[in-house]
Image (cartoon, rainbow, N blue to C red; front, top):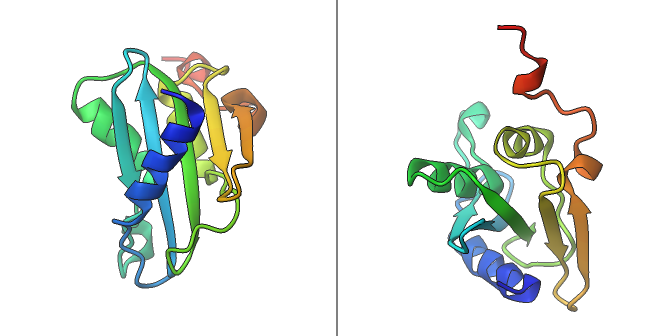
Length: 136
């Protein structure tokens, strides 16, 4: 899928966000190696630690359906559900992506004016803790 299409899928997913506390809605669209698209939105909880980000929602949906190889993810978001600027993934989401994605996995951030930013996971999460760091 083209990056712009993936960004639009993320924007559509943002509409489903449940963000009554932060009022900041986020949408993500994850493309697997075989071209399947999994979307996610942020789902907040009064117990903030139970909140789940859009990126992790998309990854967990894909993993729960047997997918383990991913090509890229697009992320959009903004206050009150109005997509305004490029939105970077939080540290926990970067760590989850590091579990399932290669260092060259593409993280695509878009702005409503059509501007697209592309980063590799390694650029966004240098020195990620991975299974290779485990001494089990």
